[in-house]
Length: 59
Image (cartoon, rainbow, N blue to C red; front, side, top):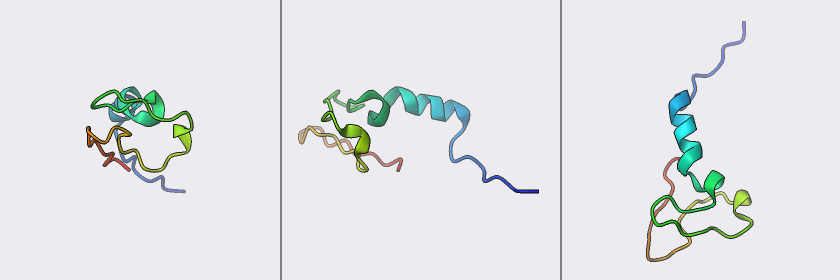
């Protein structure tokens, strides 16, 4: 029997992540600033608007 690791987030949390994370929306969840067109290759998800200051702490 192969044991599967426990999920990091619940299914509800995962669905919520799809609604607000810039990886899926292309926008900052705090101020709405748009990420550059190649945002899907990004590793760090800090807001592109220097006045906003939002930083992704989920990864």
